[in-house]
Length: 243
Ligand SMILES: Nc1ncnc2c1ncn2[C@@H]1O[C@H](COP(=O)(O)OP(=O)(O)OP(=O)(O)O)[C@@H](O)[C@H]1O
Image 1 (tube, rainbow, N blue to C red):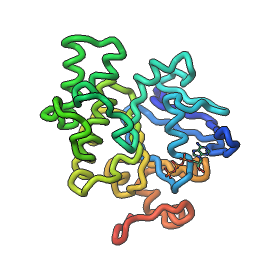
Image 2: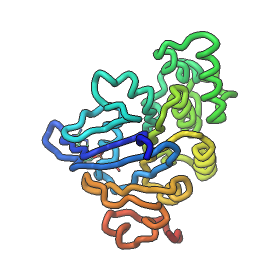
Image 3: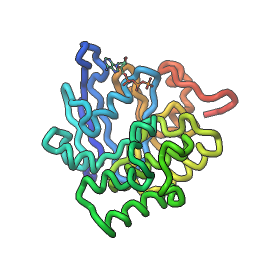
Image 4: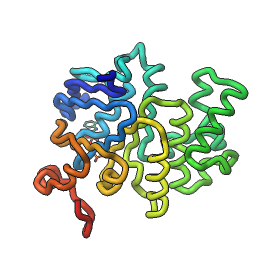
């Protein structure tokens, strides 16, 4: 089989205060997959995500991105390959205009002139935000800012797009539009979410992380149809929704 885009093996991690958050996590994601990372509060999902581009360093085990280990000397290339969209878009937007924000990453990679402009235009078009390119990010709505945050990451042409709770704080129409947007992208996706219907809509496969270990990994439809699994790991479908 081909080299996975994301290959996590035996990943363990304790925070400096001694709290052990991950206990030997294995996760392999192949090109073109969209995988939902599910699990209750405190399961270790964010801790895992922070290992994918080296913000946190593995205590034990390894993370590789398309064969390249996530280690300090590789950080620059790893951060090009792994695009993380954090839950709060304001963590990612800090320039005077939308265009400047989207240009920031590829500009840092050395792109200039027409090449940089084309990269920015393509990323903004992908998220349907071209018409707001000259606006100040802080004047946009939350849903628009989330789209721009996704564009800042797409502009790096990542090999894997990692989204932390992408549907949170969106109204139903914006949530649906974001789902359509993510479905339209030709990129490997790992999506942390508590929104189980959103996971079902977008991701054929889900991984349940619980107490720092992978508790289940399989087709989303099967996992969400397993009442005992959901109950054990504090996962709940919305009222009236049947897995
Ligand atoms: N900086 C930190 N220092 C010590 N412990 C931490 C730190 N950050 C997180 N933890 C602990 O690590 C565990 C995993 O936290 P993490 O944020 O990864 O969970 P999560 O699955 O993302 O949760 P949520 O769904 O609430 O976002 C929790 O028990 C949490 O209290």
